[in-house]
Length: 557
Ligand code: TEU
Ligand code: CA
Image (cartoon, rainbow, N blue to C red; front, side, top):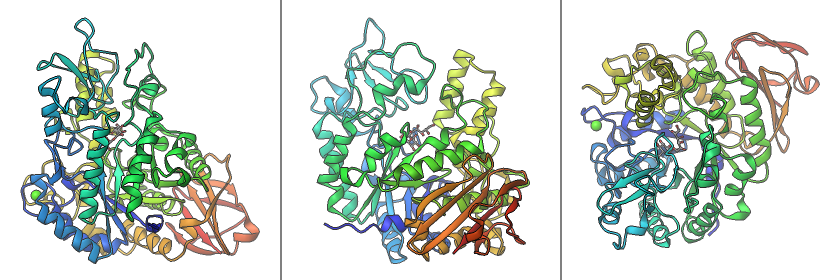
């Protein structure tokens, strides 16, 4: 079939259902809650929603541990609720992208219950089982959240492999029956009307299943590189999935690929290779990692690295594949706290990064709450929910790698709980998310940062996003235009043009909290251009120019 490229023009809104809106006051967000807020999402200008997992799950990793791919988690509602949600979305012209978690299942999935029951069970090979070595795990492979990737199972006296928590056993993609089952799951949801998939852990499915010894090395990622990241088998799987299911429908596939550079990334999304449509890569969300790729460190990212990272991906994928653009999501801290300034420049810096997100090439993903500038919060260890943070805490208790104070600071800076707090709808109790005690702490700043307030203020972050989206929808310039970078060596100002047929725009972004002087690029051409949008007023263009803290200007010819 000929596929339309609707997803190139689309602005996607990510919903983490547990924290979006609680419609029945049990403290947990749900599908009817999303239904009730669709007008709000439509008003923002959104074309499609990516829904984090809503399938049946014991919630060891908030739904990223699926126990039934064809049922809705009870707390979120029923299949009938899902059916009315998707009908209503489609009536409003909003498409639905489901999260496809196929690297692993829950240990409570019937396949795994069968698999662990005996060595000759037909489902045994759905997972990765190995015998231990003299009472030790089969290899020194480590899980993503720390600790061994092997869990001993007494029923059959063997170990199973899990890249995430021990409640998330990895599927064995070498088994063609696993692929057949995944294809059936895709078809089930496509028949229900979904418009695409965000593929979880997309570049981790294929593993080196001889599980060679990794040995001593401080860098977790380097260490596991050959074992789990970007195994060439992944490409084979996507070609099969593409041929047997993706290519048959007008759907989009975005692959979440951690640990890819542009050379590898291109392979997943080069249209000629017929694998995936778009790549969600991680380079820019690792700029504040420690020197050995550590997550729990206190390192500040450098604006020039952010520039370089985005420019590299923009250039490398030109003509070779499609980017997903994001600055935060349910796994990342809030963008204003991380890349901007969540104190005196919260609104201005939120608008600056909105400008960047919506003027680069690729499909922009806006994470719930980012459109009103929601920020990180402070949590004590006993208030945390995220399994990754909890594992880090337990591990640190064992190894004493950091003082508890250092670790607490680091988790509060980088942890996933930051983005998972309930959506702040109003300044009513619990931010208007629920009438009862919510499942998770609400950021206390909901009094000042909430949807109701933004909707009343014409200068709000919300309306700035709305305007940017309108602008992006009014032309093909920002969707298809070529990207060219200027002021490459400037450590503060990210400057680039987008060009499509006779249209051209210059984007000037001061990524810092300081006034910044620079030599205006292409002044003779853009010096008299119209200001398409800016987060400041009173702009005077000149050849020697200065930008105010987090100032963003888009000039259009
Ligand atoms: O994340 C996959 C992933 O690559 C992890 O490294 C993730 O970035 C982690 O949060 C880093 O600290 C996906 C999901 O987005 C995540 O929520 C799940 O926990 C994970 O898969 C397992 O399903
Ligand atoms: Ca509820």
